[in-house]
Length: 388
Image 1 (cartoon, rainbow, N blue to C red):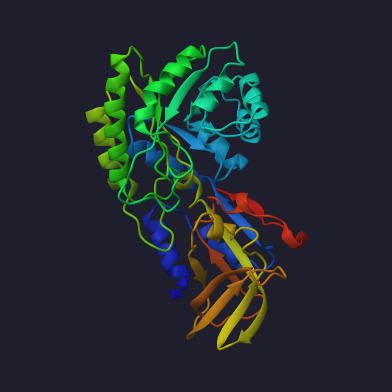
Image 2: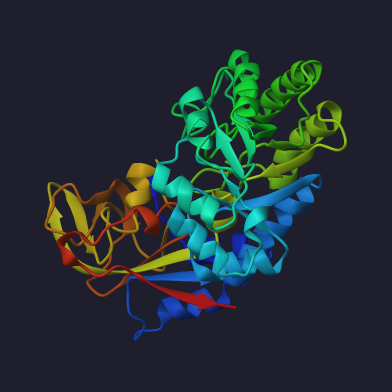
């Protein structure tokens, strides 16, 4: 059973983390403010980026565009000297609007259609990822020499919430074979990469992968392959309804393992997405309907599972529910505005009783929420409001 949290609790935590919650609070109480609205804080984007840079001083940050490609996020990353990880023609186009040099981008998708691949090369990208022999065959169509990272996977005792090793990554025993095939195809073996998964709460998984990379680099050295880069992926954890340890504590074992196992001269990069984009976005919804059914209070919101709350399905997340109502907490259900009975986000929620027209707030809705939603029932999607 989940309880809502109060404004004062959220504000206290925000102030502790150096976030100015005042403007968001004012927008919540502003009666003429149209909902649903996604409030995007530029300052928190920068705070998250700077925190990760400080926690991993050896690592160059390539923001993974997929969880949220809003222009404000991309420009903030670019203006702070960050780079980008892209996986499609659409993401390439978005990122190039910042003015960044395309040769510095990493295209991290291990499986690329020929049209997508052609477009990336045409736009000037040079750094790509593979994890199988069939993908290397696609490289033979390009006269331009490309830089190729091999993505490998490892066995872990505990997986991330979203296990990205399930779909991608070769076995470590296959790395040498792939490196040879890259050379035969006329391209450059450039390095290694791994991605433990998204919302990974176990830093030891990164350490284990770095140790595996160390052993692989030694094998590659013996065959004359020069490892120039190691990509440690992303997946750093974000606090939703459960607490997480501070990012500097989480990353300390990773930073130590990099210094211990990865020799100087090998560039280390990372592809964080969630950690940078989740907390800067806050969703404000209005209650558009109310009914009592089977001993529960049902509230119908103007955003739902087919839109911003799609992250509950695809990202396996629950977002904190913030209410400014007072009174006895009652067993409640929050559902979306569509005519589909599947459109239910929270069942078994304990919150004070609300009325039609009241608002609710949901924090940390910036990653994998808006991007995976739809306009089912032809309902309007939330508009972004960029602050500070």
